[in-house]
Length: 497
Image 1 (tube, rainbow, N blue to C red):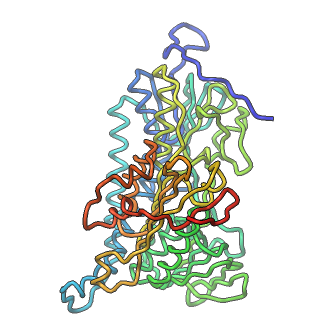
Image 2 (tube, rainbow, N blue to C red):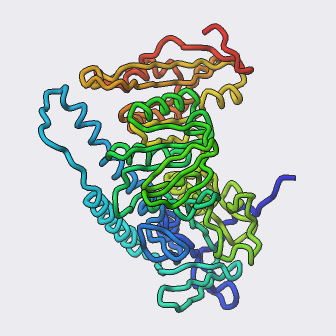
Image 3 (tube, one colour):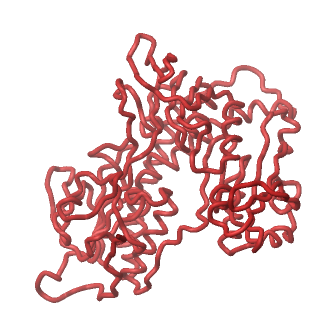
């Protein structure tokens, strides 16, 4: 039986009368990551009295540390992209020779300098986010938040003292945290948190996982000179992405010197004189200086009082919410990774904005999850928007047309790099509507961001074809693919294109 939730109600922002309705705040937010900061600032902009709490800042999260800015800013998207930039130079140095650059002598890499610069940047951003909150007249409290009752939050501050605040609404935006595989020796492994802040650069790295974090870190460490072995359970990495693109990414990983081990799991880790001994479920043995578990993240719902007020969680511990991000408790909402919907920073921002407009601007607004673009910053990157081919076959009422192109980027024709760019469009054969787009190649994320606007507007293949390309670019290929590669019927069978 489907669950029912209370529907949004348009109420006065402030209950100024005496009694239980006279709260300290109109909104109290637990968690000052991207979603929580957006929701609190937007609500305050509509005149709400807002308080927010977050654990003390640290580059590495724990039960007692976090920081304003959350995972994305402090130990996720931003520092990861900085390291991706750093690792990409090795390929650029290689390619430069055929473009006439004589690179003489040794080119050395200083990991500690990069990490110091990365840490300086995220520390700066932590301060920027703090100023954004205070500038929006949001009251900031440093410490862990806990729900005492549906209208009370207790903050355990860093000095050991606790404060209680009454609030009309509570928003949980505590995000998620990386988890360790439950195998012998797991305490020897690191997660992406530590991987962004290691004191010494690991020359030999084993990574367990086939998701975007695993693939990205494989490229980071390999690009900086480490020997990388990547283990994942499926035939290809990046489960959930377009099957054809997954195969291209796997090939590119190997081409960049990463040793891929498909359909292989880690069984045991042991400390040895030379580092860490890794045993797989195929009884293969490897040695590494660092072993990273990139096998998923878990919503941060422990120790924040959800059980005491009866907030419902799903089987993985995520907070259950309705289409307006409201929990089964009428005064409590949740947004971002803690709800395990689409775990992307821009999605958390959207959810925070929709919540604030619904509750404080009198404009009920549901988050729209259609055609959310995303990227994997492997090298070269993968970016997608809309439906994969498999999804389109299942969801389209009739046949779909697949347009694809694989080509040597112009730069590679001179550098000699054996790495193709692959592009793909999925089109509804009956309506001509473009249902999905994918690209593996340089600047894929920058290109697909523009394509995402077209899909959001319901663009047709004819409109793509009528668009004049920019020459010479890789992106022009998206508007010059005229002939379908294949036509697929609702049964998944390839028919005449």
